Image (cartoon, rainbow, N blue to C red; front, side):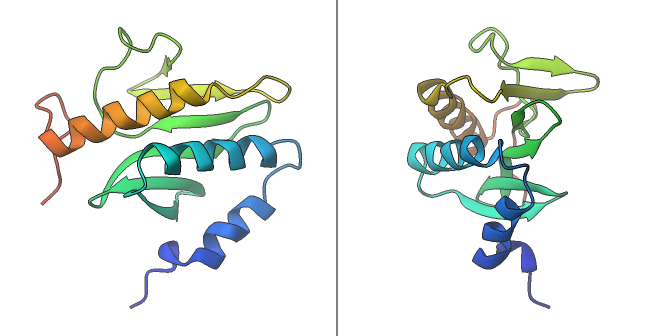
Amino acid sequence: MRNLGQTQPLVDAWFDFLPPGQRPIARILQQTVRGALPALTEQVRWGNLVFLIDSVPLVGLASHKNYMALQILLNVPLGQRFPQIESYGKGQKLLKNKPGVAVDEDLVAAIVRTLAGQARRGDPRGGRRRP
């Protein structure tokens, strides 16, 4: 069976369903994540745009009412290195990007590279590669 999450038209269509004010933020985040680590693949999963390395989800873009979130999907502690990341509930971590506020592209790229490094090393705190 074909995995529709991997088709480029589906990824492109994901942007069409965003509120118009969030599309530019989502495009900047997408370009920044891709630029930070070109080896990442994109899929639409759980209604979000998800970036994976070696089939391991690292980050996702998720639309919320008042912001576009960069979701941290790899379960590793990042709070000390990146205090801008907000934690909610049981392990949910977000970097909020609000309309009218410039995306911190350097921060996003640093987060992606850090997560990728931990995923590749098989970080013992939960960032292990999946078989």
